[in-house]
Length: 468
Image (cartoon, rainbow, N blue to C red; front, side):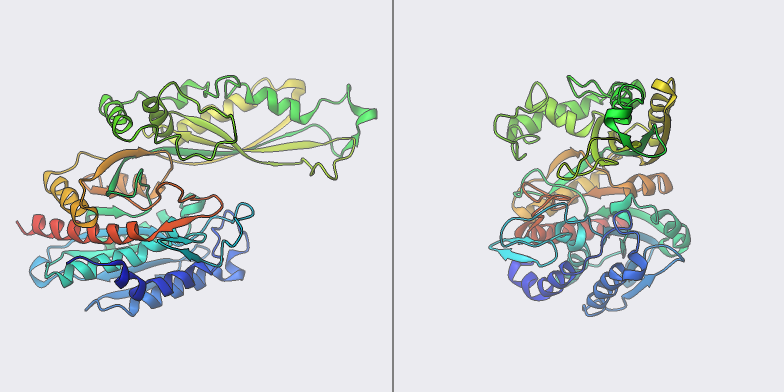
């Protein structure tokens, strides 16, 4: 007998809903996060729930470095005969994206609403469910009589800002974490809700704010236009150095990578079985056609191609109050998704060079860039391959699926560099219409329960491997 949705409703759902009501926005979106106290309140709430669970010997702690967002750890000791000094880390995060816009009627980003098997609210699927799923999976494995190795659940609070606080904590907790041999990340996606989906790659990211300044203060357009260059036009010119405006393809060669044949084959296989998964769930406006020549190519565009999205702007007044003014400056927020094997520092250097050389009219250009590397899963050990299959069967009565993801989880690249021999399981509940980062974010509750059961089996498989 496996863990059930009814059990989840009793064990976790009230506490998960209460977490959903906390406006714990990531620091990139709330500069006053410390004084507001929402991130701290979320950490305390989750830690209190963790302490309430039946996990003999477990130690729950909130770590707080000066000026950094907190980290929660739950240290579940190994069974007596499996105390070999190795650690399995189960990772998630508690910080949230902002609401983004107006949610659908009856829904609110910070007032969770359940409709059947769907629970709507900001941060529930990305990634508030992860602490609950991790500990319930450990409990379920123990309930089934499995001896487990040491498990540490690690929940950070800066992931939505690119995990700037994670490295300092990994430094300070290095001795505590010990010899990490398996990492289970519950912050990834799922192409469907009928099986455990294992992520094979993640794109990196480079985020650039670029400002073009032409005046000390705005001037009447009738007096200045034709003499003073437009800051918007200058940025439009510079953007043409980054992206082909007809195709949407990134121009800079430093941002491209060779796609392994195994990943091309996997994209074709997924397209053959599931169809146009990269496009079919997108809420296109009427008549809009997707980019790409085929379903398989769109999967690769989503996972291995570099892309550029203009995600914000400053210096542009709302059209309702826009006057006839030649504005002093324009700022654009650019989000580059990078192929998994392209280092963000190399990409960032190329972006900066393209934006700052031979600037029209010698306009003042300021560029600020931050980034994180992508990730490709190492070769899966035979014992883990068996455990993944058994876990997916236990949780979903279906073999697992394997696919790349278009997003970024900096923690995976960071830990992969620190622990080059570690085995990875990157999975999650961000499936069709989960709307992570968008309006109407949704957690599919049966999938969360399926992941709990799958992870319980994977943990048991890891223990058997270590004990053999």
